[in-house]
Image 1 (tube, one colour):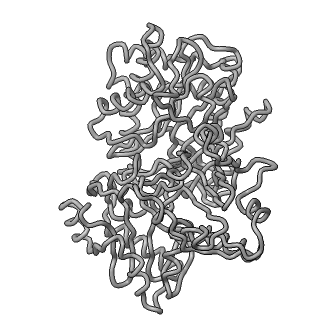
Image 2 (cartoon, rainbow, N blue to C red):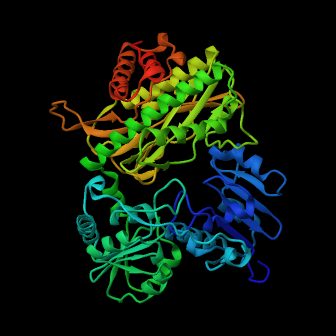
Image 3 (cartoon, rainbow, N blue to C red):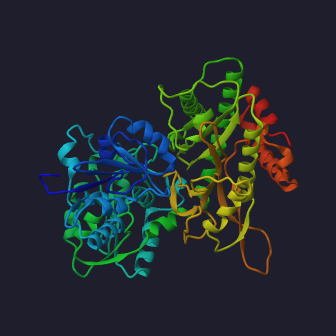
Length: 580
């Protein structure tokens, strides 16, 4: 910093594709600070080092930053400054704020440039600190790229490119730069393993009038993948050529850029016309076709079989005195998923198994050092998902391992009531997720309780478990819910030092069969097939409609899963799904 004249450096936890989860090659913030959470930004000055993160990671950050000298700063907490507020209060006129522009989206870099201009600071966007300091940096991943079966994808690459180009033209552009890894995987029907838990490959893509190109390390392409790309006239260029390629674009070209996923460095390289707009691929990708929907249903049946066996195994094991830890839950879940379906490929995210007060840590990750041993009492929160060739799953269940308290049963039932209210909603076409969010929160709000995370996120088809553009949360999101979208429903309550409770199903938006003079209505079809925890339900707190809803759901779970279970597993499922 001294040598290059930087007074403050901002180090985000992201990559040049602005991925939620990324390859180790770009985890510089983690290398520098020791904080491993998915959301966090470090700021370093000559005298201080600080790290900002949100409420999901406060407890984790306190543990991982302990003794480092790095100060934890809490996002979205009253009285705590934002990064910009802190910089404004601690820097001086003409001080330089340095960033690696390859890691900042166009939106974020522009916002920072405006901020610096307003406060008399200078912005240096080419501070490539990781390249200079990180001498033992892991190489860029080189896993093999495979073709995603067209029968599972439900659409050819040719059709997808044509539909995307139509939307590009609607925006007044003639070409598009694609940086989002799951957009690229969807567009070309390719899958990889460059990022843990998400079957994508590190690449850029360019759709133009004269050519369609993928920028990738070519040695990663299997012979089948090379033939596949050639079949659809997709050119293969080296990953590192993207900057030079963009610099050579004709002045008359008009290129669409999603300013939230394309980096500032790439945007600055273009000297031609630019249109800034949300990725049209994200909109198309969010609406699943009939082949994908069939795949989701199959994946959730396999997942339901695995999780029925998992829950029964945990309950019986703990009751009989077997030593089981939070880490054992993950190991067992993976084993049972592999047994349930030969097309299981990976977890869709690192399993969360939070026993007792660990359940109150929203994104807790058990390690051999931190893991609790399960006991025949209290609650175990399990948030887990699988990547199957035919679809992606994400489910949370809170289970009773033995004796429970009245408070735990009351909290569980309040969370379940909110979950059911959203799952059972019927709403007019054109409704947004933020208009439905309160349904899941109202039972908790009535008791003066709330949860700090979103209620629902979109889910990809054998892709990212967190996918846009739709969401269900308190923050405004202009995207409306449409038939074919898959979205989670996961309210919760977290009592620090006591317990955490969350209940999550994935929901498919489908047309309602209601015949209304007020227009078309939609509702949700639950995809997840895992029983709720009967031992935690306070039936006296439920309405007749809520009891009916639970019984119908359990009947569906039993009907769909029982043909694939037998013995003790089938007996457990039958009892778990018994009508209230």
